Length: 81
Image 1: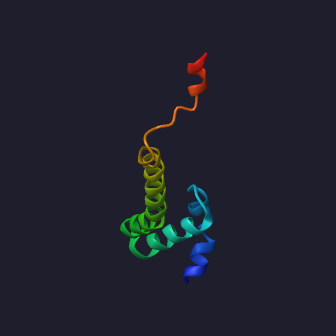
Image 2: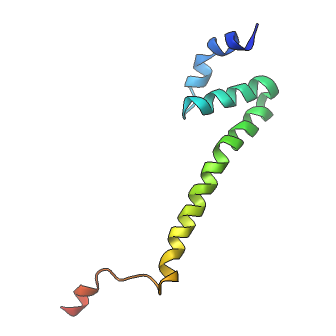
Image 3: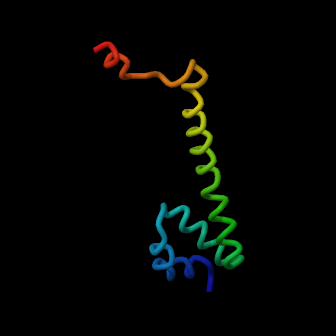
């Protein structure tokens, strides 16, 4: 049986997992070729770049206030009352 027919017969395997269809299909193809190891490697390769970008962006946002003299007190006008 060719790979196209296997994929068309396995919609429940892809639909049961959360995420976009591209990730589901990539993980399934990794599983078809190299079983659990392939699915794990492909899933990690698919998710890790996005995870790292979010972490770097979040760390950058956390550092910016300290580079500009500390955290700004937005409610400073309340101290004058």
